[in-house]
Image (cartoon, rainbow, N blue to C red):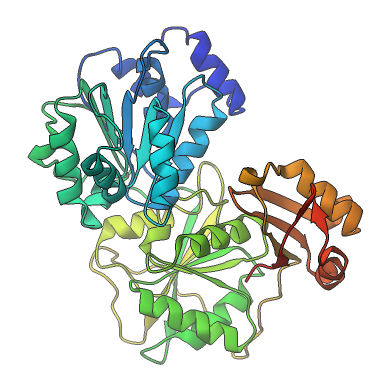
Length: 440
């Protein structure tokens, strides 16, 4: 490809990326043609940058007002895209809009005329109806994880948004599967399709079948979790009720775990992901909402507590492990006599569990919630200093620190948790009294 512009080189450097991957190179080359684009690639392949890099080249610093709109099916994905864009260190202003976030705050952010707006379809449609921003100069619209947005029921909102946008110059659709139908409301015709999907399972992925003598399988799951040597595990269920039920079962055995599904408040979901990233939670029980578009670390073990009815969902779940050249294992929990889904025949080899239950060990880390954040002019250095000087933590006793708008999460050695809480109780951080407790 042609030499990257200075702006793109700077963006990649700020992201600590030496050079764009094959998908991103193809997207940049396709961007030179005046055509709509469809990007098809599995989770973890770099789709976000594959549309952000071409989008960045389309932005004009001399224009005032929104020039690009990115629609994402979930709050987490919207926030992740915003985070990546900000890390690129461009001169352009981006704002994020999503359900569960204060409308008043978003209205003020939109009044500041951001260059790029990212959000969930429902919230973006609401802002457009209220006239909180003008769509006049929006030239590029991105439908990220488009098939997931349709699955979540955003057809009406996306159609409404397109009506209010008029006719953008470029439309970019992304998906982790090629089995999508593009509705007429998008206006996409004869797009440039970049298909980087793979039908085969990753080379580093091992599939194993685990059998249960009962119709329900919580005890088998507990045995399996104690057998996989405290690896980070993502346990997939088909319904929210199953997620909650399994989590409650593990709680009875004092097994640290967390839930993730669309029925949880945004604050709870963000806290859960922070705990997974910093290692204070190793077991995440989730619906397919966790299969795509989340900023979470490499998962060593995927457990299908309930098998998805369709093969694409199975592939997306497994995409959470064995990425790139890494190795991972996916376990299929099946009741005796269950032949498994038709798309997976013959079944993978059986994995035999021990007769006795060995409970998983508690993680070495726990998470502190600190009730101040970016809006209070508190940054990561402030939090580290607070926990080191007042909390008495040594460098190796303090883990990952994440700063949010109104709070912060910090990983501390679990054995130090009680002592730290006693020392920082009623203390001030950067002159502000902050509530500090264990994040549950």
